[in-house]
Amino acid sequence: MAQRRINLKDLVLGKSSRWKLFAPAQAGDAAAALPPAGAALDAPLEAPQLAEAEPPTSVLHQLNQSNRRLERLLHELRNEHNAEAELRAIAREVILAVELNPDIALACIFLNQIAGSYAVRHCIETAVVAVVIARAMQKAPKDTLTVTAAALTMNVGMLRHHENFQNKHTPLNREEMAIIHRHPEDSANLLKCAGVEDEEWLSCVLLHHENDDGSGYPAGIASPQVTQNAKLISLADRYCAQVSARNYRRSVLPDQAMRNLLEDHELPLDPVLAEHFAHQLGNYPPGCLVRLQNGEVGVVTRRLSDDGLLGVRCLRGTAGAALADGPLRSTGDSDCAIAEVLSEDQAGVRFSMKQIWGAQASL
Image 1 (tube, rainbow, N blue to C red):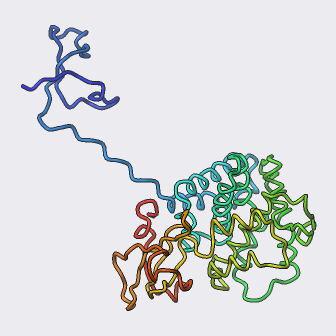
Image 2 (image 1 turned 45 degrees about the vertical axis):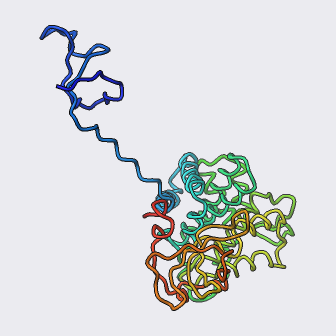
Image 3 (image 1 turned 120 degrees about the vertical axis):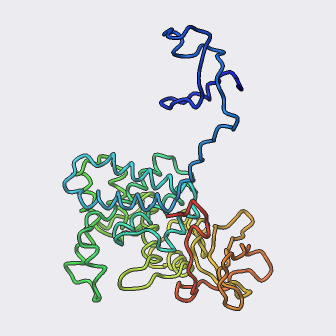
């Protein structure tokens, strides 16, 4: 009979031992119920099985979970009086998802992988972009959390109207425009009634449509009263509104959306924020569908590396055939520079995010 001494790793709390335990004590002796140090055990010949490793956390799954949780809470917010803690918890979930893999988090936006109503999905997407920029600016964790929470709740004051606006095929009328123009104030007031007391959070919500030159709404406040955090949310909001598909129009391609943002001469742009948006998102963010100079079609997998290059997973070859296990290209390779950005219809490719990014992008 094979024998060996007991180690602590052999004993698992709440589970029966796989071996017969005995000690040099008389049968029936209560002291022998547990083996003393150095007791031997009847060991099987095979090695004990190791516990299976837990699968890596999926960014895509976590963002969708946050979206569902946020949608339920925002629709019930008028009946809540202590919602700040739960809203902060959802904001932390979004931040953790972005920190886990910012490239996958951004790709979820451009590949339209966050399910649910546009009104709430847009807030999640805006929060993702805001977190990416806040981290690049090395904002303190407290400020990043505040910006994220504000992005998630910036439109709650018109949530009931938002979907109706999405389904319209005609311009908004005067009453509907009035709802749009007062929604920052309505949102801030609703958050106060729901128990939010963070003044910076409420300020970001109230100011996220104000402009430095006083041309915004609802109050026409000008710089320097418009805070950088509010302007960060505003830019993320405007950018995501362009690159997300609506019921009444297609999304704007990422390179054009960035140009629209940076070259808008009607709205003054904070130069610090503009620099970070251009660098962190660029013209070809992760999830962007592109055609390379050599004719291959693929999806951008990561943002600019330190050497200024992008990664592209090819999904269709130069002859137009689909590639089951397409090669990973670098835009620094010969003939692999990006020639143009493509819409989903133009690209003509079908794939799952898990196929491109692995388990961290699984549903």
